[in-house]
Length: 246
Image (cartoon, rainbow, N blue to C red; front, side):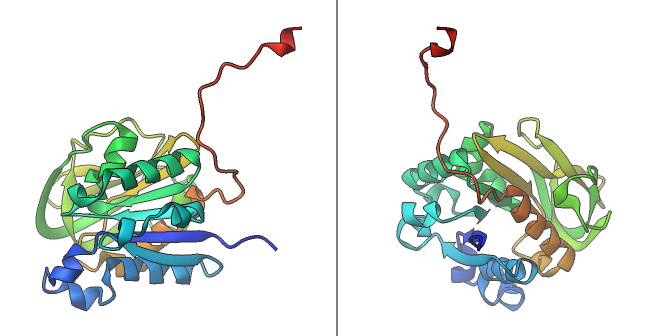
């Protein structure tokens, strides 16, 4: 019998503890991490889904935890600099060794995302609660399976170009907004042995993670990023002897 897929949903959990914005407790009574975890349990019934938050020791991301994590989902917003550099280094090493990473919404400015991508990951933004249309531009990609195009999000914070990221391996989704802006809202990268998926919809002020279509994207992203049969090891630079020439 194969091992279950092990998924960890991480959230800085600052908005939830501060009680701001006011409507967030109605949308996400168990926090954003709780809502995302519940959605993944429904869409991935054979997976083991757990949560961790920033206020926990080692931010809930100790080495033993990451050793048994196939895919880590990361949501952060206003406490990026509060994440310990040693924990960021640990997460980076696990991603390079083959752990999947899904970076959500304002996690684009997290230490781990910027470190893995090597750019500022800055973008244009404004929050007028307008409609977002998420267009599938690579329907053959596994993350796009079963996702309508466009995926209509009634109210959402606008993220727009320029998005300062390297050219992605795959551009899966592009979003458009009522103000005319566009944004590369679903992109993938490979770093070392690890697969990374960034998906932008999901602000704390709106119940975006309660939408079934958004939940489908996240579940697809987890399936794609997971490599449960891969033996974890960080690639090393080596100079092997040229024995094959003798």
